[in-house]
Length: 223
Image (cartoon, rainbow, N blue to C red; front, side):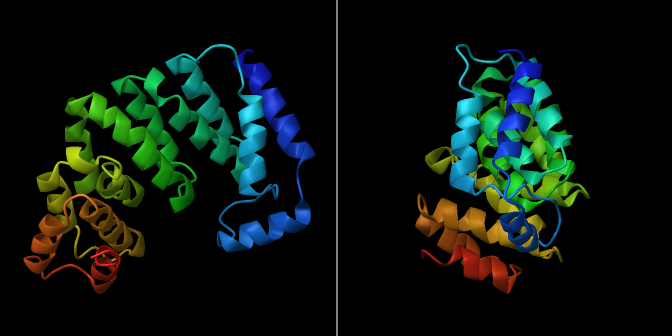
């Protein structure tokens, strides 16, 4: 199946499953940031798996083409499909693919796509190409909200492989950030790492009085 054929199958399948009444509620839940077709997540994923059931793994350029095409479509379900597609096939992609993911992160950005891409696309890319850690440092220190959130969350699945010094450094540097999504990400990343190293997180929090109340609440949920 060629990329145009896959996209044609995707749009035809999703349009046939659209539910305008449900779409209104889904858009409202996401603060009317995006229009929706109204396909519930389980059904959307089932339809998406059927669409991308191809006999071979895609090449990196095909993953990029499909993802960017999904971002160019109006309804949010297409960005969800693109996110799932990237995360499923991230193993086919090299370090240069981080540039494509960056475009996805800053185009039509919201937590629903950013968080999945951070943990399941950016995280694996950085793990496989340690030179990309410098890009994470730039994102964490930069002005773009969603890239900073991604830098905080990219180690979310690392567990024992987590670079704790870098994680704690990001959390300290961004502790006073005024945005909810950064403060929430700090707490979430610390809570997740606490499942592996609870005493390290506890010690870090005791020595870091500048963390926001939101970050502290999130981090301490499992401690």
